[in-house]
Length: 315
Image 1: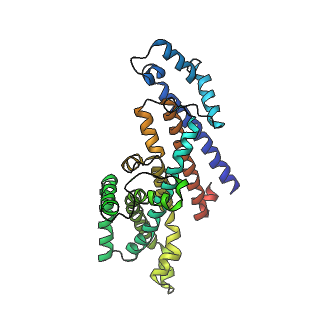
Image 2 (image 1 turned 180 degrees about the horizontal axis):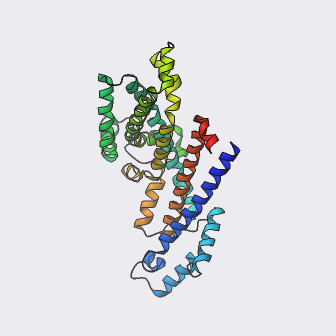
Image 3 (image 1 turned 120 degrees about the horizontal axis):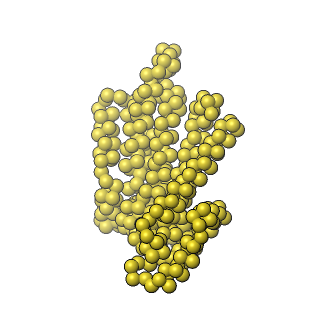
């Protein structure tokens, strides 16, 4: 197990180095001067030169990359040109919204998908299975922003149970903050639950056709017990893959939902930074999101090894 962890940690470190090179290179290959791009066409040469000095664009490319990388390792992401505050403070404030939102949406998605997938697999070919497959296909097809607006219309405008948008902050209390995140998390969770339920159903059906399941059934084990006690664990590997991908999407790709509900999250921050030409924020937030995706992938690999011991021996 230690060798398996060491190999995965080495892969994580190499992935982060390659990702940092790619992110830095993409910012550098933007046509023109990044400082002039941030200030606009009407900026004076003196202002552009001063911003270049502030951004550290006067040195060589290797020196600038190492300086940027060293700053990230120490938590110094620079100063935002738009907000005039450290980027680390901006990210921390927005992460306090995006991370709970992603975790809540992932928990809702899993809580919905597991019983639905188990039910559909246990009744393969039946009317309930057909209904589940139809509903999950509908859940995948419906755009989440349209579903989000429908939720606002029903639960915020008509019933007035939940707020239509905005986030009161954690200082206002757990209950108001939870209410502010509930509708966006549902809008994010249901399409992901539809995908997860279909993957779980397919994996369970494939596992139920294995020889060891047929042997267990021949010895008198009921279908439901074989499904929950034997097939489910062996079907979790593709499910864990989808869960890891979904968490990465929910954390980094919820820009539309955050804008629909006016949530001050990471997705909205990077959208605003792009529109305001704040390349320091864009570079730093993209790198943080890349780190989060790679870290989730590493955690998924560890979960694989815990579910299937054969992977540890191969590792």
